[in-house]
Length: 309
Image 1 (spheres, helix red, strand yellow):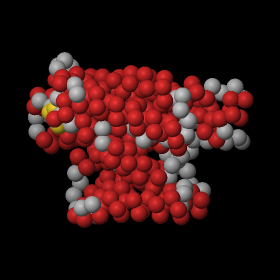
Image 2 (cartoon, helix red, strand yellow):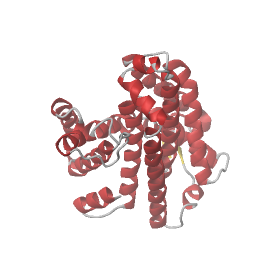
Image 3 (cartoon, one colour):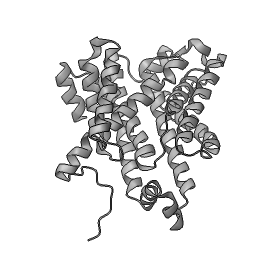
């Protein structure tokens, strides 16, 4: 939240919607960081769960008349179910093949939604006014409600990740990432724990997908399953900040939004600059910005390792 206030000072005004947007990207990046940085599962298909969560929320809130907050939970459940089904197949793949498999799953989801008339088909769908106004009569009230929901999801996600990483299951997960064969020799069920993390991350990402499209009010298959918005930008945030460290996505989110605000008027050049920054960081600071800070100071704002006294 402090970062959103700081960036608000940079761009000239504090905007609750921008703050909610920052919290959403931060949370999605933390989830991808758990999946890749800690579990060693490089996914380029997390947009599948953003899109499924958004569409499931929209359908539940409109066609089924489910209350707004309950519909958000149903969006998460849709992502959970899809991840359980997808994991049966993609966990037969390893390394780069796993990454490609996650992208294929996302494309299957996008194409399925695009040919489903009940979900608006290729032209997309919009939220009715009553769904949005359930969170507040005025735009200001709704913006604050969006911010409150985004903040709650960010805090719950962060707390869940911290508790998980400090548990014996988190220790087992890091052991699997470092050496799957050695971890299995010590009795760790590598497939089971990685699959559980994948499914849990999918549920939380789909919850955020519902919130994203509650804020945007309209969705199309291309926007809902955008690899640029919900995977490429998230990878940029995590890599810039520092993968495998909880502090990394915080710094990465601030840098990403600062660059976006500063370069918004440059059109496609903005994407070129983002790519150049990402390449420079990978070449000269593989651990990201927080990796450099940690190497020089030893600071750990969110310690996840247990220390023996």
